[in-house]
Image 1: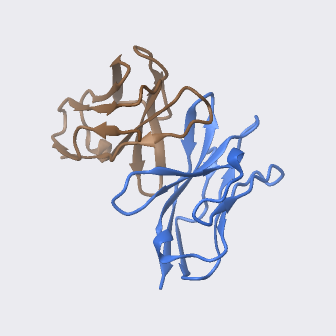
Image 2: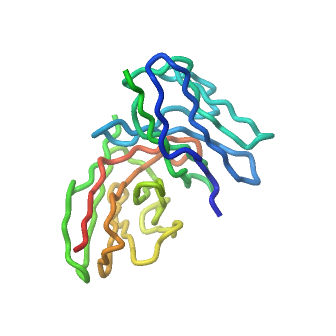
Length: 108
Length: 113
């Protein structure tokens, strides 16, 4: 069964508009969740993790245990935010399970 | 800065060939992983290893095996390549802590004809 789901494969917004990338998870324990990002022609890299409660490049993500969600948000999207975004969940120690990914395009 | 190096950026192999994908990390990380990345399916875990000579099956191990003879090197082996194994393969490593981030290589684009 899918443990991490990202319902939108593609998301397109205009520069300056708010953006929200959705992530839902299924896990019986206490979840450790991450967002990873892959910019064009670059390697996949960590964007942020929920335990840090930090904002990276203007992005934030709040863990909502009631809705089992970890949506990624940014109030004002920039063109350089265009990338593939993956939500990920830690299971069984250090093993990371990824969602299907959302390709974000920010139009000028 | 952690460096995870995958030996080949592009590979083209024929059906039935034995294929080796090599990955080396230079930061003494305990954990190493092999994923395949396919559009619409995200990253799927093939195999992982928490220590030298240890290996664990991921979600899609069928048709693959791995080898970890040294801490820094984790090899993925396709025993008999098939066309449905055409994909982008990503290697990653991490420290031995649950919250440690994964550091990825650049990937190997494998085409099986």
